[in-house]
Amino acid sequence: MLNILRMEQLVKTLAAIFSITLVRYLILAGIPFLFFYIVLSNSTTKYKIQQRTAGKKDFLREILFSSSSSLVFAVISLVILFTPLKSYTLLYSDYNAYPLWWLPLSLVLSLVIHDTYFYWMHRLMHHKKIFRFTHKVHHQSTNPSPWTSYSFHILEAVAEGGILLVLAFTLPMHAEMLILFTIVSLMINVYGHLGYEIMPKGLRHSFLFEVINTSVYHNLHHSKFKGNYSLYFRWWDKLMKTENPDYVKEYDRIQEQRFGSRAAVA
Image 1: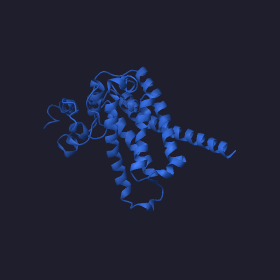
Image 2 (image 1 turned 180 degrees about the vertical axis):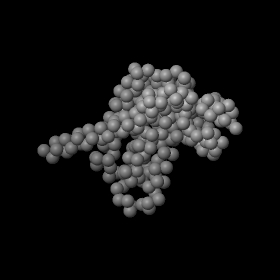
Image 3 (image 1 turned 30 degrees about the vertical axis):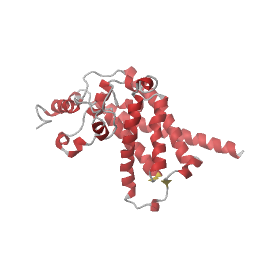
Image 4 (image 1 turned 180 degrees about the horizontal axis):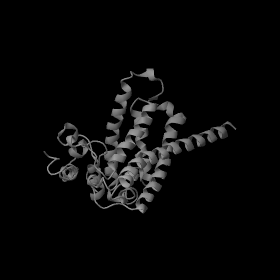
């Protein structure tokens, strides 16, 4: 009887986590989609990276696959946070267990770890013997939109969600910081698939330009199908010589399109 009640509780918890994950995706992807693709579509054309546009069938396909990905992420979250496995992780719930400064630092470190995990997982997904069984679904979006951010084959969704297990077992994190990580990660992911470049003009000649990815950066990966494998930072692509050689030129083209002739390189 206890086992049945426990199972019923887990199912209810899974349903709640799935609902939260899916609604969060719909909101964080839906707001920029509404803003750039519908409400201000005519006045934001100069921000657009590819001039062609995806269609309704593309958006519906992306939302459908993103829904199944959300379910996979919910299952992984359930296992980590609400089963006996949690006691074997480095997750903690007492704010006094570590200094308060560790909270933001652990979040930053989680992004660094994720970027490394994602780069090598992503390159593996592009192996010719694996690509058509998994990553091909994501690359059906050659002109990505915010809805593309979770559009994965179910097997890739398992691999993508695996970062939660990696973080739980390698990095001491407050459970709420792990949840915040999933939100920040999704927001950056949505920006990477936005289809529009919104970075300020000043970024081009700052130190950050050499470090972080932009929407142009990941858009090139979707249009060319290779190179620019990283998620947040440029360093792995630079180190492994997989950065698209046309990236800076393409970024400057978009910024010139936005700010005027030579504005991006002045």
